[in-house]
Length: 293
Image (cartoon, rainbow, N blue to C red):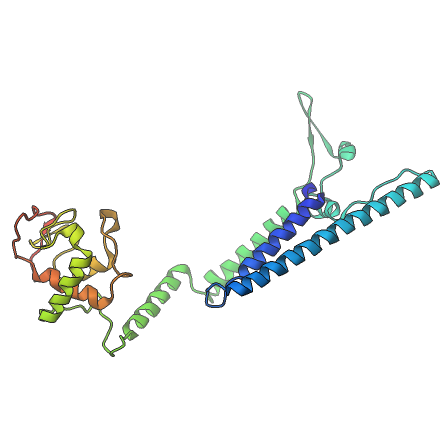
């Protein structure tokens, strides 16, 4: 705690606190940056406050020096030794944080143990450590009563199940702008409509060709036209799920944040429609054989 006796350290801590506050204020309620003009005003205000704070600190240091010099002169006039009063930080360190005994008084707490001239002191544990230990005991008792005895609060497993139930209810209530249920891996259907397949082919050409080639014959990624599948299977739900969640460990990114549910449904239908097309230069089968139910 002696570090806090340095006035410069105190000033730096105050400056850091002000910078942190300014950064927090620098965002609006929606998380957007505040206007440029407002930033200029805030920056100017911060500089003014900083200058005033530095001047105030310097004045306090001058006043402290003057008071100390006057106390030394008074002690010399009275013929008594000058004893400097403990600072607030020193008192806090001695009484609250460590309760350490001064070096000149260590003989009063020296134990009888002597190991090759090394003596042991009977220092107390720091009060903050003891208080935290007592608090942890109280917390543990309260936790046991609330969660295991009275069961007034759900345990982690129950919280997880509750959240799943809420998520499922929310998922079921989702509707798109046209009133239709949002498409997901549970309700997606294979659609052979020409417009749907054309849109799916367009999505495929923009996003999938790099890995699976133009006709689905496979390149970096596997062949999409045969009956062998590496990851899940060849059903429309499996294909939609593969597009949506991807397989990052195998190099396929999830497209959920880049494509709409309708686009993922369309491209899944297109991929299923090219099954058995046998394009030239097709990649050898990979994975397991999938047979449609």
